[in-house]
Image 1: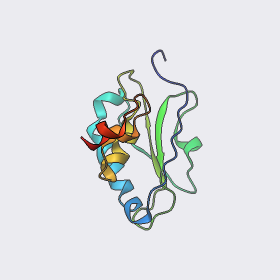
Image 2: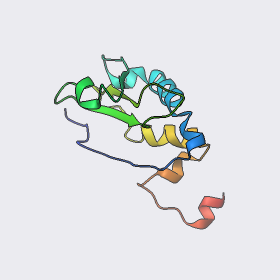
Image 3: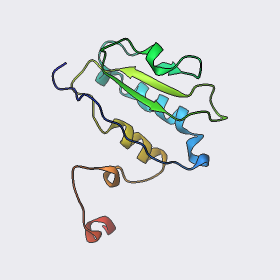
Image 4: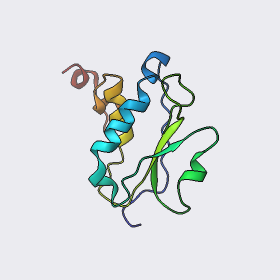
Length: 120
């Protein structure tokens, strides 16, 4: 679809203690953004026996977050089909920054800030 990017992969290391909160944080954030996804608002779950390729139809744009096997969840990740060009490309990074109690701007790759701006 026009306006949607092809592929973007962000791999962010997260401490185990923080990672335990990933399933609830991402599910909550994904549910809050239902109008940005389009008409398919169902959150798709992945597990070791039900990987990403089996839950998202071919040629559909999607958002996917994976945290692997954490004791706090029987799932390994969540996927969501994207049908709207209004979906924010930095949605995952913003959610992760919030989960880690960091300022989302620090994750931004669009702008560079000097030390003075960062301290403000």
